[in-house]
Amino acid sequence: MPVATLLPFTATPNRKSASPTSFRLTEKFILLLVFSAFITLCFGAIFFLPDSSKLLSGVFFHSSAVETNTHTGPDSSDAGSAGNDDRLLAKIKKDHEKALLEAKDTLQKLPDVIQNDILADKAKVTKESMGKGAKDGNNLPFIEYHRPPGATGLEPQDPETRERRAKIKEMMKHAWDSYKRYAWGSNELRPVSKHGHSSNLFGSIKGATIVDALDTLYIMEMFEEFDAATDWVEKSLDFNVNAEVSVFEVNIRFVGGLLSAYYLSGKEVFRRKAVELGEKLLPAFKTPTGIPWALLNLKSGIGRNWPWASGGSSILAEYGTLHLEFMHLSRLSGNPEFAQKVMNIRKVLNRLEKPQGLYPNYLNPNSGQWGQHHVSVGGLGDSFYEYLLKAWLMSDKTDEEGKKMYYDALQAIETNLMRKSTNGLTYIAEWKGGLLEHKMGHLTCFAGGMIALGADGAPGDKTGHQMEQAAEIARTCHESYARTTLKLGPEAFRFDGGVEAIATRQNEKYFILRPEVIETYMYMWRFTHDPKYREWGWEAVQALEQHCRVDGGYSGVRDVYASSPNYDDVQQSFYLAETLKYLYLLFSEDDHLPFEHWVFNTEAHPLPVIRKDKTDRPNEVE
Ligand code: DMJ
Image (cartoon, rainbow, N blue to C red; front, side, top):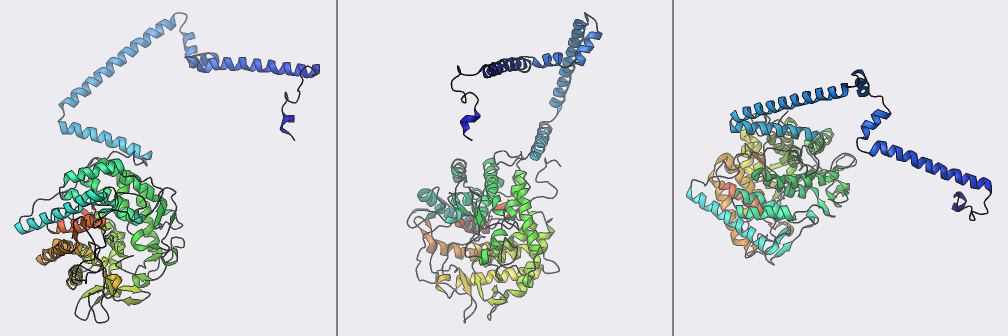
């Protein structure tokens, strides 16, 4: 049917030739239109003219007010309004007197009592607003900031230590100034060619070195540099990018760095940015099991896994290294979703059968089944174990599930992966479907520090045993440095074919300024005060100065067995976040970032322990 035949007027082109019947119909229609316009006008007046409600009540509802007036007789309306005025005046007077009394009361209070009242009121408002969903990074609930103890530390007593610590600070200054000069705003610095370098791990997010270095600048009291970094974060740090990022890397460096900067400085911009980024990472968990994807497009929210990972699997060290940051994100945003996501990962893992009690590196996020049975305490596995222990410590030792998972896993590692070489070096091998590969990665060397940190809480009477294991691992990792020409550790070293703690493959001989060995020295120093750990740390400082320091910063080297350094031309952001921070703490007093108050994320970003008695948040209301 053509559209024209449906329209009454266009269907009658010549109006004069219309029949009387159709003319009358048109007239009727016009009349109808006029009438309905009139009705509309009347309703309009009722609803939209001022005081229309009164008119409405008068016209449509024979309201009780009208009825009341009829009972009071002809003059009663005036009398009624006079009575109302009196009552109103009395009420105003009463309110006024009440306000005066309250003001008097307040003036008699001590200033900090007044302050506390204000805070309690604020907290009440916060609590009310939290229920209404303060999800947007810009609309966060009020949190009263308390700096946890030990954010900065006193000068070491001993002059040599003081001098060494000052040297580390000078190294940080060189690394930072070079980055600022040649690569400001890029993710990392190319110190030899002196320009910026951007890793695809961060998509097109910029400024990894700035965010990773914030807390190191703060704890070294480099406040001018810290302020410049803060200013950059405020003005230029942008997560609205249409690019794929590594969820793990972005979490440990950016979310972790921002959280630490917030807890150290109390600056709201860091809390806001951390939550904003955290929210952008949430779509990574949209998988059938809730095990997150490794890679995520921050704009589309579409995730996927590394193409090389066994059968489309997610990686243990990646999905297992979100817990600390996400617990803090929930705490700082009032949004429980972050915590729920990471607690669900635990649930999935606890439902699975574990070969020999070990956690394979690969897990399929669709089926919830393990991929290849490869197990490692180095690459692909490492920080998962670290986060189980630290989740328990960060929860003020209330997270019993994390604790149990950690000590059970450590037992399985000891039984299946820890071995002693012919000449007595303890190492942690890798496990491939039941067969051992007698190789230990530089990354695995963090385990000395982790085992020392957990030794105190070890079940049974294993504390001493675990401290010994930690010391043995520290010794082995030191050997891996000592047995090279440059006195810097290779990426991986082997215990087979007649060698011990030496890299035998060319592609395992590089050193990229990694922190793990120094991290272990720092923990061992704190727990034992054995001076050898400071000496070993100092050896590393000298090697770094001699072989990695260049005009434009610090560079990794391609072969630690070569007679002179062949630079890789990258100053990794973790050199400033971790290596230099752990060195600085190694030469600091124990009350600088004390372990009873702070837990380090895997990128060495300190996060405060969340107190079970809420003494860290005295004004929080239940
Ligand atoms: C850091 O980014 C973190 O320590 C991570 O857990 C593993 N490796 C690098 C440094 O080597």
